[in-house]
Length: 116
Length: 114
Image (cartoon, rainbow over all chains, first blue to last red; front, side, top):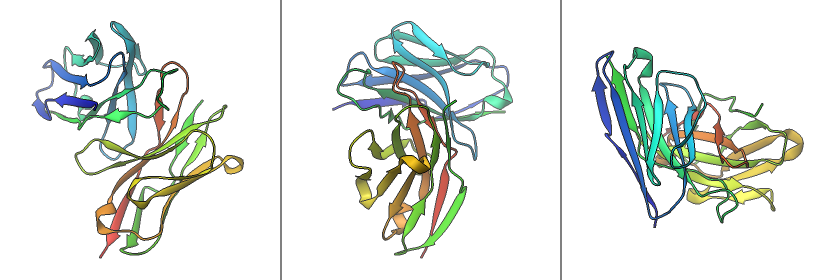
């Protein structure tokens, strides 16, 4: 069966420090991968998605970047964190379109980032 | 542009009472629709989905949802709420292009009175 792992689960970082959140998927190949952010009291905002290695689409211009160095690895980064980067970050994967999936996303457990 | 509206930020129901959470969407094509549930500090779990066929779909944990094209709605229902249903519920519309992106509503927080 497929599993998705996200780490770290909790992170407290000072303003101006770098960030790296990592996500890996097991049990599937060539998935679509996503990073969402959930700010306090708000819904989920799509930050980045990737349909393949090295292919990153950014949804919202911001202080963050994403990379996909391997098929099942997705990394969210920042060179200098802002206070506004605080939030709950969720990684997700889906089956490729045209395959057997019906479009649902499968989410990791999330990473809570607090920027002080 | 695609969008999802969940008009109720909070809903409180008594345990054993029925529940309906509202969801309206805006999408030019036939939508793929989803309901997810999130417990505090956790990821999202899929409750149910609609992509074709019968407009009344059954999900896990006794939930169901009905797709009404004329009203652009996909409301979630449960006949008898349990205390463990207290959580945040998100409706989403799926973009069935190569991205498979989901556009989420802002969520409805369900509180259950004993």
